[in-house]
Image 1 (cartoon, rainbow, N blue to C red):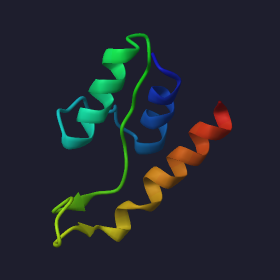
Image 2 (cartoon, rainbow, N blue to C red; image 1 turned 90 degrees about the vertical axis):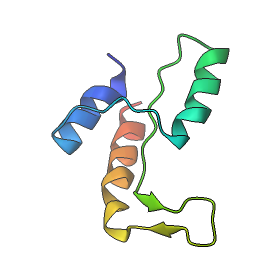
Image 3 (cartoon, rainbow, N blue to C red; image 1 turned 30 degrees about the vertical axis):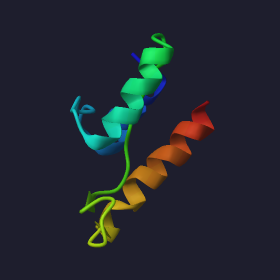
Length: 75
């Protein structure tokens, strides 16, 4: 299990979901170059990404920020 996976589960009280999403494109490219790389994509909820109507749900910013701080402190 990747180090961030257990921390994610503790922080969000649920297992990380494996999904095919837009952010997964970059993860897949990186994984293709280095197969033993552990990758986790996370962040706030956005709507209308890469368009003039792009919006961020402000209440979804803090949880991934706190997770990132914890994860970096653990490394």
